[in-house]
Image (tube, rainbow, N blue to C red; front, side):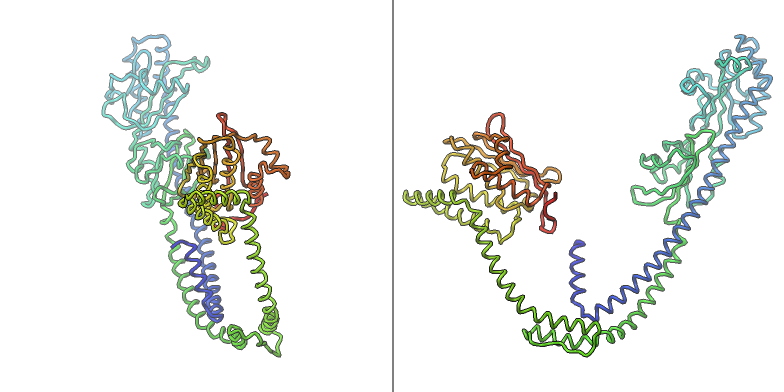
Length: 607
């Protein structure tokens, strides 16, 4: 049962109520609606306030976590700069500048204290690598994977592309054994000379930060079990590995990533493919704007505190509705008592007693209705006479319309053909032509309707073709291609038959046989596209259009002009008619009409 049917049923039910029941029902409805509206507004206000507080709280948490991670990563960057200011590193840079590798082990030993100091100051650092043209330098406590050179790694290529230091996302450490998952800070080593001359030293410092420690760092501050937090880049890819990245499955969806704007922080609501709603908060890191911490929580859990308000509102509403049932019943009896007498008079009118009259000494609203009831009775007799006259005029107009729709010339030729065939004893053709002509009359009448289904219009065309194919034997054939779903579309009656008639009378007038007519009806977007095409003599579109726009007494183009004018009257500018002549001969007439299936959908012409 669709919405229209349900609404119709409710409307009939309401109209079947007595006035007392309707007033009683109206009171109850208004009270109920008022209470529900009040409760709903209160609920919405509370909901928005709780949402605002929750969003702010969640945003503060995400901001704090982002700040903690940002500060920690900044400290690691500071540690790199401290390493470069050490005497051991400065000596190393001199050796590199002089291309002297004879002091390799001396520099390696001198750097061990610096390495240990850096790792001691920040326990998140897993390993350190200084890659130079004279060799790699690293803590001797770390096992170097000598098969992987920094200068052949993706990190080196990325640095050459960016021309600056950068943080890489989580990966397996390729430079040391143990397959530890790390995030790497890659920076170019600098010396006083290279800094002043702004030239590359070809020395690179790689600081590997343990991924687990970094994840624990920002997760220690995020303990709410109803929220999920992710450390991702602007495309939703995880910076450090986290199994929880699969919990919701939408972090990397384009429509989700699109809402992670370029702002440093923000929040929004998101609906996943299962129509679950989430509150999303995010905050970018200052040290790398492409990285951010994202917090996600289910919206329903966010609003769980509103259940108490909702239940209280429902209980209050039910209580007031029960009270209103008792009060409104007595109130309606008091209000409707003056109407009962008028109701009795109306029942007598229902029994065709039009002589009754309402009398009252009061001038209240009920009395005013009664006096108007009296005037209505006085007018009913006149209205009955008017309706009778209008019905008679309507029947006359329908007869005139039927007569006007028939082409006398076609009617004369058809009767003449029927007569000739009857003389020749072709009784079967005579019977079929008479039946087709009768059906044409019936379809033309169409119950007085101006708009008829396309299927009925096509039946009218078939009856016309049945007559013409017996009047002009072997002259032509007609094929129809109609999309079945278009049969219910409404079109002006007798709109296609004149197009067929135009092809037969004008297109094939110098032909004895071989005529072909193609009738097509199909969907063209929001339009019903009707096309009639023949292989006859063709038309001169400009001349025909001139005849249609400036009608004369000539019959040339009369049928097409009739169609053009009727389409303008029905649809205004919301239609199109095109007439073309094919290169190989023949004419094509196309109509584009709005698609309507009920007369309620038709709103008249559009200018």
